[in-house]
Length: 338
Image 1 (cartoon, helix red, strand yellow):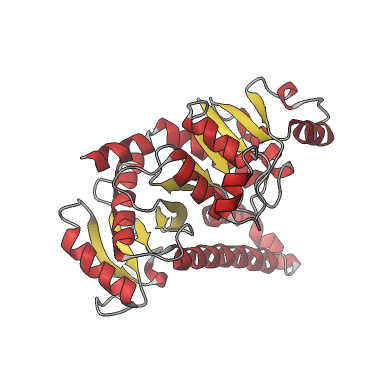
Image 2 (cartoon, rainbow, N blue to C red):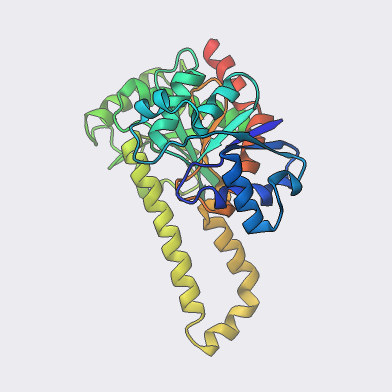
């Protein structure tokens, strides 16, 4: 297996990409190919690890040299068409041509969606691919779809998001009847805007036919109860929801640490509870859940957070290997062909 990694994508590239890859390389069976400017990558390796080149760290590393990179401010379609030697475009071409099994990038989300759709191709029967992100929930996990790929959606798109998430959760996590909820401002079917009201009716009509276990509208506060396996929404709302959850996690962690360090008595009292505190912190850390898989394209494409650090890249690389091993995309194609 070969994991393709965009070394030049993201706010902290290439340093955090390289450090994350180095941390992950001995925890996975796959080979990792970093795509980007070879001179820049090896110079950073020398600065960070004291090695002359990346392959001196592990023979499971390779570099695919490119001369361009897509910036966050670039217009997606223009960038994909004009920057043909960028790390992202080259990565997509390698993936399509079978030179890699999964492609990871923390770069421009719009360009990643455009490239995945135009260069890799959509699965037949899916109008729009969507970002499926994993979040912690009570004694379980929550799939959020769409987490930011499609800011404007139609009811048919949300219906397909529900269908894709059902297939993905069944085949990847072994959940026989994933409980799919529609994110809304109330649980009543009359609540929400035109999109959510029309989607609710469509899901209710088509769920049995498409093997979707639709449980109705779900309010944001109930998403993490452990009673829902996936939340369906448009990419605009989903991305706001995702980042708000990440912010709350950081707030809880920061306030907990400050409270425990407030005085000598609280610090002493903390010692017996340290294992439980570490488990709690680990559970709330979104970095532990890796990146988001683009559901709906013909090959596995993973979007890492634009601000990813070495820890997030480490977990995203390990997660990407699991995506390939679980044959998530192949099973999605099989289901839609039916």
